[in-house]
Image (cartoon, rainbow, N blue to C red; front, top):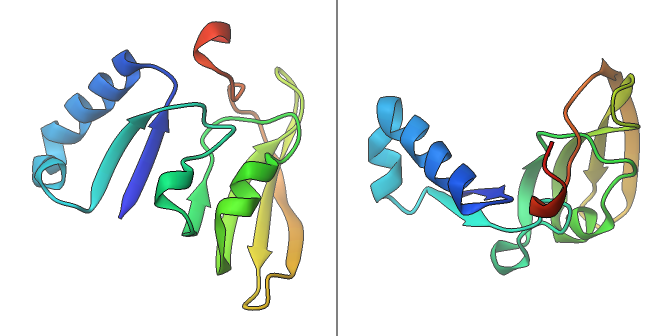
Length: 119
C-alpha cells in the first residue's frame, strides 16, 4: 500500500480530490491511504516500508523515516537548506539493515515542515 502523509486535513482533502480525478478507484481500495501527520516523523503505523519518497526538503535526513524503512528498502529525500540548492539523497538499507547513501543530484524543493510552519 501507498501511504501519503500530509500536514493538514485540507491537504489530505486536496490530495484525495486530485486522485479522484484520474485514479478514483484507488481511493476505494487498500492500495492508497492519506493520513494527517508530520512528514518528518513518517507514519509508523504502516511501517516498515519498502520505499519512502519525501516530497519536500528536510534540513537533515529525518531519522524516523530511516527507522521506518524496511531492510532491502530505499528512501529518497531532498536534504538541505530552504531556498537553496539541496541534495537529492538516495538511502538504501540492505537485508541486514546496513545503510548506504548517495547524492543523486542538486534540487530545490519546498521545506518539509509541520502544520504550524506552513509557508
